[in-house]
Length: 73
Figure 1 (tube, rainbow, N blue to C red):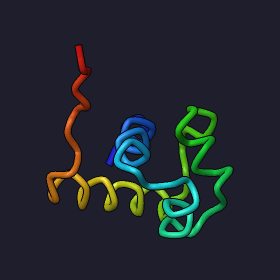
Figure 2 (figure 1 turned 60 degrees about the vertical axis):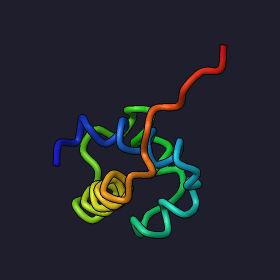
Figure 3 (figure 1 turned 90 degrees about the vertical axis):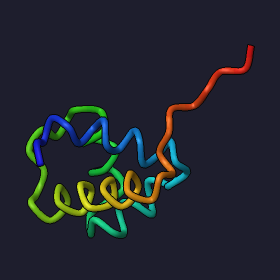
Figure 4 (figure 1 turned 60 degrees about the horizontal axis):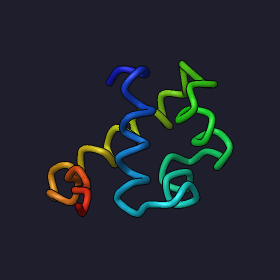
């Protein structure tokens, strides 16, 4: 896990329909912490939060739910 990947992973999780609250509960941190990680204000989050986000992203990609949204022309 790279801390620089976490904002992108959070974007994918949020894009899949997860909420800040759901992510924060699984990561055992405040919603504001998740928000600040996503915005790059926290570049070195706690190990627990970082690994939880990483695990959620792995579950998302393995389930096949994460796919780029297609634009309708």
